[in-house]
Length: 268
Ligand SMILES: Nc1ncnc2c1ncn2[C@@H]1O[C@H](COP(=O)(O)OP(=O)(O)O)[C@@H](O)[C@H]1O
Ligand SMILES: Cc1ncc(COP(=O)(O)O)c(N)n1
Image (cartoon, rainbow, N blue to C red; front, side, top):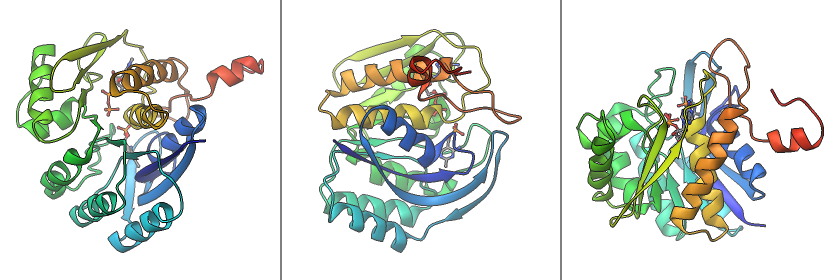
């Protein structure tokens, strides 16, 4: 079995962060490992507090894993501080980590700054050049490029600018635009459009986390980036389609609806 690592924050409500990542890995039949960068107190309505794990403890978690276990892919999610980001980048280089998917988590869908704005430049400088795939959403791409994004042409241009910052490919996610949920993959040569109809639901907590983890799981099994991303897009669309109305706010995506259905259980 392939081992896939998530380096991310814990979401106490289980919809995003480490918890979403591990569920996604399990649903893909890969073994999930975790390096926790922060503990958040959050639910479907918002994020209420964050306690960062020290860079030293992040480094120790990474050493414990990489010194012992073969890691076939890595997904990076929420990392809030500059010194944690530089520690993670240094350790990924030191251990020769492969198939790195960088999700440029900045602000939660509920509006909380999960990345200290003072650390944005560090994230771009340190993590983007290590990434096989980087997965900005529209607000994140606007921060990274300093340009507004309203159209598919703007998304293509942002993907070009972000590609120039060093990743092997850019998945520009279009979930925040009106209309269909179109993402664009750019590998420096061509644009691949990944088109899915918009699902009308408020339950989209953790969609970005789930998508990037699915890409990492697919890369770990040897899929090329374009195939890994296409399969992950199909996975997130199904997970949103079967998302759960849990709590009072934005509920989580559903990772095991196929298993539920096979077992004759309700999955809504
Ligand atoms: N309502 C929706 N219906 C279908 N796909 C969606 C919907 N919302 C988001 N997605 C898809 O989920 C993935 C992550 O979404 P996005 O909202 O762009 O990023 P983030 O979760 O990082 O804010 C993308 O593939 C996006 O196209
Ligand atoms: C620990 C953690 N990581 C990432 C997100 C982003 O997810 P979303 O954009 O759905 O709020 C989050 N809310 N919490």
